[in-house]
Length: 277
Ligand SMILES: [Zn+2]
Ligand SMILES: [Zn+2]
Image (cartoon, rainbow, N blue to C red):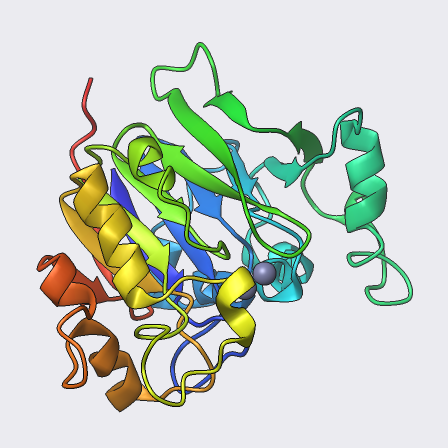
């Protein structure tokens, strides 16, 4: 299974970083986790190899509806034309796919976009996504299981575990129970909004919505993952500030002190991950 980071910024695209999107390619399948502006990378020659053959599906999983995770849905007709697309959209109890099609078409539809999904050059299906387990393309030799967990974030969000090979947790307040959800995955992609909440001058406003790098590292350590990749990097930082998320002078509890195998995501970073069978 190949993981490619398409967008590593949170909220605002900035200096070579698009907003959140991850490509997961396995066999003939492409799974995309979140549809931030990073989705536009799939137009670039270096990334086009990730697209599956004509006729094979693309599955997009949305962690939540905030625009830095969904703006790329309006780019889809520019990205591929021959791949049926399934959007797995977070649902409340009782919400069906057609309700969520209507919700998404309030963004991908007039007056914000010329037409809804029926105007796309390929079929789009919207499926209601709830906490639990989804099997992508059941019956297919490349079928893959995606486990889904609810997280604490304004308006709520979902965390993902794909084929026991990787986990992706973004836009979530710290939750010690997330460690059990990510247990043993080779790669954990986790948001980090600040280095540590107790650093002098750290804005506390995001604390109910996001984690610190130190908290992400605690989840990685307690879950016994192979590697931690910090993503959804904040617009109030720069590369020097991001480096401080890994290791910094004011505290010994920065990410690498808690979990040494920690790296920063950048757009284009990739990993090959063996899928446990
Ligand atoms: Zn976000
Ligand atoms: Zn959010």
